[in-house]
Length: 118
Image (cartoon, rainbow, N blue to C red):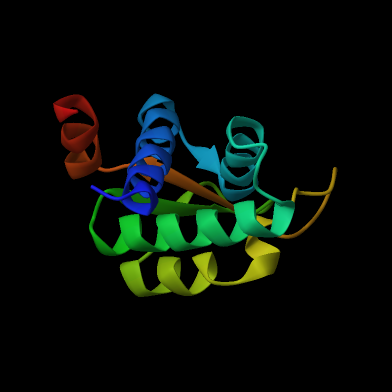
């Protein structure tokens, strides 16, 4: 296994570790990657998070929910989740009292099985 693949496997494991505990905001995932991999710039951490979350959504390891101030958590369809995860603004730290929706990921049953297998 090459170093790049080891890196991506480690990031996937980190994301699943977070997402099996509870819902995690997209911005929290970027922050975790920045903290655990100080060799990455903020831009590299964001790019890595977007790539990995997108891949994990496509693989069925993660699901995504939207939380808007006027509604409870709403589970998103796969295509909408992929579109949202590709947009930079979806990963921004929410503003206090903001009116923008928040996006959360969680481990699906398949994600939980993958996490506990390793």
